[in-house]
Length: 132
Image 1 (tube, rainbow, N blue to C red):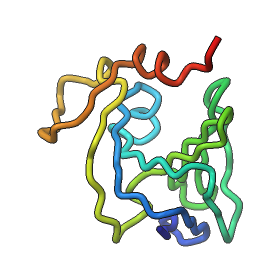
Image 2: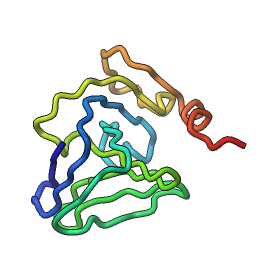
Image 3: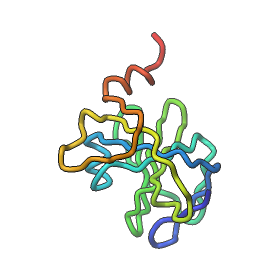
Image 4: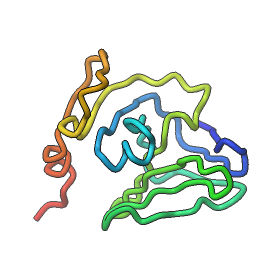
């Protein structure tokens, strides 16, 4: 898949993926203005043109954006080097909404009718926490 930021100064290329998830956590909602429409792209992601600006938003992740136009480019999980990119970067891709996470943080003023797998924040942390 190929996409770019609003001004076109950063282009991104990832493996094809039609699976789309939503994150309702408070950080993603603050960052994106609503739920993050997230595409899990693994570690095989390349950026060309200007380098993304990176902001470490937690102990385990950083977020990237274009310093020229402000377009959100990625959520990067540091422990496993996984990039999760906003679906809006890829204008010609046909996605299928399959899951929603942090459903317990979703505000009541919106609702999606798609039948999806839904996980609370606690379930997400339990599922992805490193083995003790």
